[in-house]
Length: 230
Image 1 (cartoon, one colour):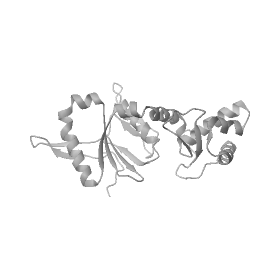
Image 2: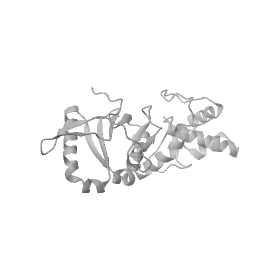
Image 3: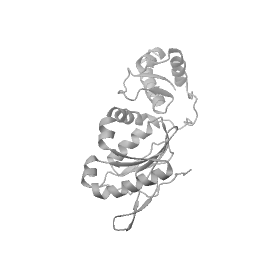
Image 4: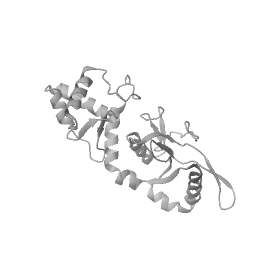
């Protein structure tokens, strides 16, 4: 089984480009991106419960072009899942696919052959998928990203509901009793103090962002969204 734990190419961050680094991630290291489209895709990956691990710029695929000259292709991501085949991912704008069709054809063919040998799946993911088909999930991911790494004293590798303070204990007790419940009702059942309610709303979204609570990501997250214990 192949293992990928280090990117094969570093992306230089330039003030004049849309490249950059995201520091919230499931692989415990900063994730680099070369475009705003890649950045948005990373946010989708961060909140996908089916994903075990992912890595950007993960490997080199060597192939020969039409003239026989050796070329190297580095796809954008590799994604491993808990219960489905590993995927090699290329992120491209649809306009780029049309404009560079011939140039990309050989790269993608080489990637497909590589994946067939390894038992992987090769996918080209476009802006239509990320920003149109997954528009709601992307909005939810961007919304939750502000909560995800707020606390640094909680071990997210543990599956138990964290109870590092009394507010979390109150939330846990009430959601265990109520079952599937809206964020609004959970908070209202927990306290009548408006200032405390604001704090509990924040903690509830923190729990959702870190997979301690479930929510339906295909619908826009609001105070009326249902949450339940994972």
